[in-house]
Image 1 (cartoon, rainbow, N blue to C red):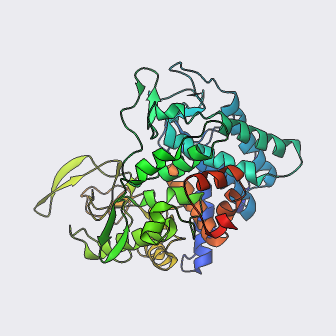
Image 2 (image 1 turned 90 degrees about the horizontal axis):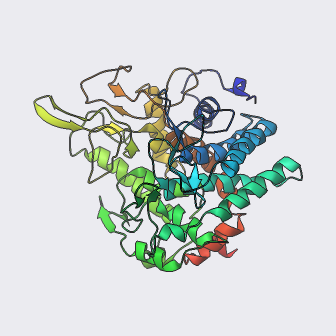
Image 3 (image 1 turned 120 degrees about the vertical axis):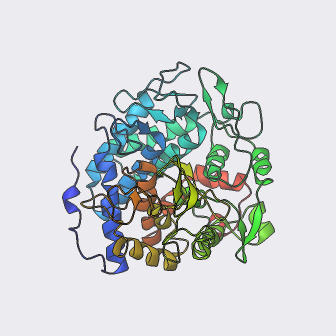
Length: 445
């Protein structure tokens, strides 16, 4: 399979127009899904660290990103079709069963897979949320490729079959809310998607949407009953600390103007809520209660990310705790001074005014765009005393598929609403939103 990576824009002065800056970033970030892939099965690496397994969530992001690549001219339609068919055929034909070395079971897939064999890696769980991200990508492809060719028909057929195979009812584990996952050695995990606003919004819509194994609305209602409405910096919003929670479901679902019971109660929608959450993040950085260097109106972005820890070190006479990969958030933490540039880009549709200024600051002032065609650093920390490869402080040595995908896709939703408009064509998703109680806006039209 070939790609048109030669279309990548040459390195240029980042002080171009906003559109030029976004296009360069989108193209360079898209290259992850060309490079970090096994071409024999289409599996996408979780991160650039040597030996990293496949992340099924990263595959979902990749499939959707290939469609952006086709539309933007980063790859040919033929190349995109070939890559998507390769990975869909793999998942459709891989071993599915209760054995500990399978690829999936009950229509769900293991969180991590061996890049070469496609078998379960790291004794990971059969993951409901990561399967949701994978299925979201698959449904994007199934509703984008509407041509008469046998290849496009196969994409539609495989996508439909894989979605129908997911047994969401089994994933309830005899309860009303969805389990986090299952392991062949020990059964269901002790955790459920039953507390607090989270990325499970997409998961519940997909489970409610299922034409074969739908769950009931009572689980969605039970989960919503735990949502926390808070007032922070004079901004009222549905609280979740890490920024990715306010982004991931929105990559595929356009929540503008549609309202479920919780939205109607608070006279808002989830899109507006993400706008407010983004503003809270910036304001927290301006307030900077823990006195981290460089925080301010153009340095923010607290989310699940890589970090310099784990370590507890004395810095400038004060003990500071540093974490490795964890879900950072604000205003209640955890916060160890680590900022994630990708996270602010993923908020571009919600608050373009502050995102564009911050992105330009990251690129021009802090030099956080990697050399060559690699895009932004995943995260950085200017307080951590060890410097690795950057003049301003510690930077993550790796890039992550689930960081790269949101950059590509949310830039595109901001520019053209492409992914949103594709998913709006999916009758299953529309039905799931209605089953969840959403009304109004484009859903009524």
